[in-house]
Length: 157
Image (cartoon, rainbow, N blue to C red; front, side, top):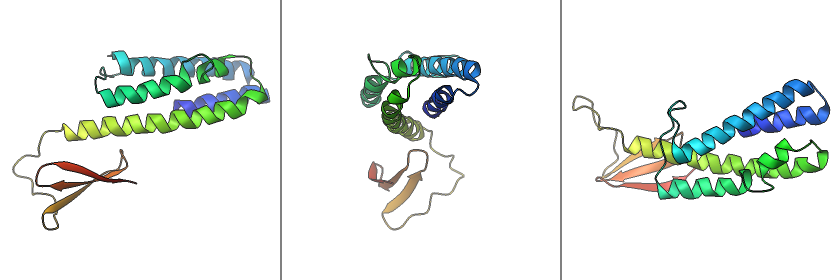
C-alpha cells in the first residue's frame, strides 16, 4: 500500500540513502495518496473511482482524515524535514491508516459483491447445508450466511 511505501521512502531519507530519489518518490506517493483519498470523496474518472455516497464509508473516510490531512497528521510529518524523533508517530499513524483503509476496501468490495447481478439460470445453486448457505468474501475478510434471502454477517476473520 501507499502508506507503507511512504514510510519506506521516509526511512531512506533518514538513512541518507538515495536522498534525492527518495524525496521525489515520497512527494509523488504523497500526492497520489491525496488524489486517491480526495477521489473517494469526489470521484476520479481517470483512476476509476466513483463518488462514495454511502454514509458508513464516508464515516470511515472522515476517520482517515484525522490521521492523514488534519494539521499535524501523517502528511505534514512526512513532508517536514526528516527526523528520527518523528518516526514513532509516523509508524503509529501509518498503522491507523492501514487499518482504516482496510475497512474501507472491504466495505467497497462487499458493496460491489452484493450489487452483482444474480448468476444465470443455467448455473447450479451454491452448496447448502439445510436452510443456510455459507459464503465467504476473502477480500472483505468476512463470512456470510444467507437465510432465505437476507445476508447476515456472522463474523469477521
